[in-house]
Length: 109
Image 1 (tube, helix red, strand yellow):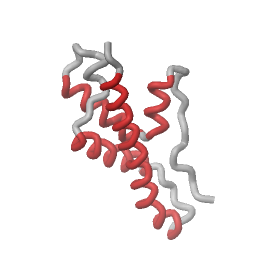
Image 2 (cartoon, rainbow, N blue to C red):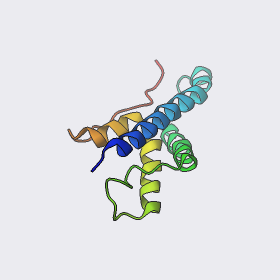
Image 3 (cartoon, one colour):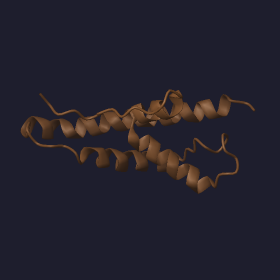
Image 4 (cartoon, rainbow, N blue to C red):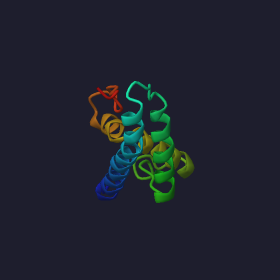
């Protein structure tokens, strides 16, 4: 199996996840400054939505080469969820050391 193509798709998904986190942080910055005590628990869902949209329109599928029997739509949806979860989620899934839950949007001090 040639791993060149899956690594290219992984790099694209990682780039989208990092860009998604940067966009959400940029949009949440003014909210954090204006309301420093607000609980931003919902920001994870905003990140998931924007990452899903970015992954969907980029038309990437992390699972196409790795699991050939998986339906393309299912692989694309899972890829979009992973992209929306952020770069740390993508790293945890493919790291192999087990998933670790990170607080990617800590409260402003």
